[in-house]
Length: 383
Image (cartoon, rainbow, N blue to C red):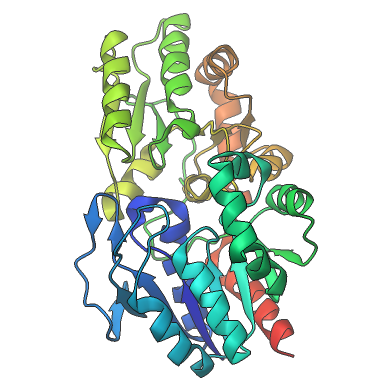
């Protein structure tokens, strides 16, 4: 089976959707699926240093890249549609990652012309919260071809039940499947703690995601400072790991300075590889209080390390976390977060219990299991 994965950008600095694709492809390759990535060279603030318009590899996965000419949001590439028209027929199936980008609409049109089935992973872009952001542009996109892309897809892959329900209700769709994102627990430096005790110096809450207003970082900072004051403890720290628009990152620095909190709230910038794995393994809690999050890959990565999580109900994985007792679910509001954090800080026994539960839940998202589920969907679409 040959599968082409089309995505507007693969730079991990764009966050979970781009980062997750590489692991997905690696797991599929390990099970005999021939895969290739087609993407642009887009990266926040510039371009990736990659070979263009000729076969290469990306993190060990066969790939081909095209120059992004215009628009950070749309990521227009002049050369990509031509290559897609000439090459999609060489694949049994095309997996499109995204909706509101040039690469996605170009891939769907090429597939229709060549009669190649395709499925779409919308990355959370179809639920009501996302559709309300820049709504006029998105309505126009859907009218000019985006809705046909979705309706003609052999299937739409959602990563959580909540994303599926919200998206299908918003756009009257009915041909979705739920397959979560996976984590390779063996090769990514993730390993559950053998000793779950958190009675040790250097405890910290970890935020690990792209920095943007919808991620709830401002409320988390305010709530953390207040909770730390409530319990009169100087041992807890907050590590904010990620990158984002410069003006927003500067606003976070100002907020930390206003709280006089630079000694215990750390802005580390983007973490990857061993540094990221170390930050996850040594954390006492991962917090992701987003206004909108269709999945929450960092939650799975934290649980794989035996780290309990704090998430808002708007995070796609919140129902699974709550049902498994693998963390705490609370609204992304300053006072609610303050109360929840203060309770977490003061109850080591409960932190340990939920840490143990998080490891058990993480096993469900092992990349090999997710790849098998995805292959079954591919086979059903081709049968």
